Length: 125
Image (cartoon, rainbow, N blue to C red; front, side):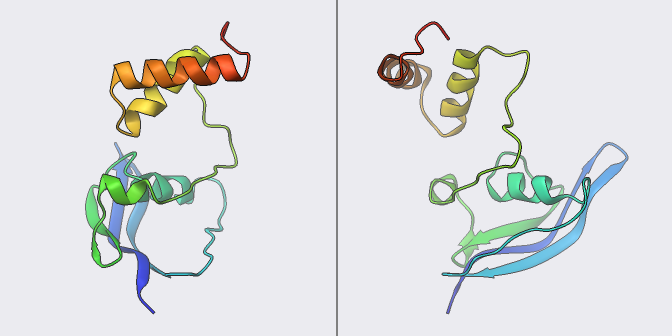
């Protein structure tokens, strides 16, 4: 069986704070994988690196034996424990930001979000 995701020697630091220090993991295709650890252990940082939300300072991430691409990330589901929204940002602005992170242009995002906000009756948001 091949690997769906492989992280090789991934490190990430934020200033003096080391979030990940040479992490290597292999996730086989078809398996279920969880990250366990206390707050501050680097779980979310690793998931954000796998999802290309942030980049590592060192190391590589592979998807099906090739360096991970944005098109690969679109095949990965991620449900964080925390809602991950920015408290000081309006809902519509956050939705625009997230849509653009996924590769939509501002015009495409605005049109799609308008349709969904109407569908859910949340236009005022």
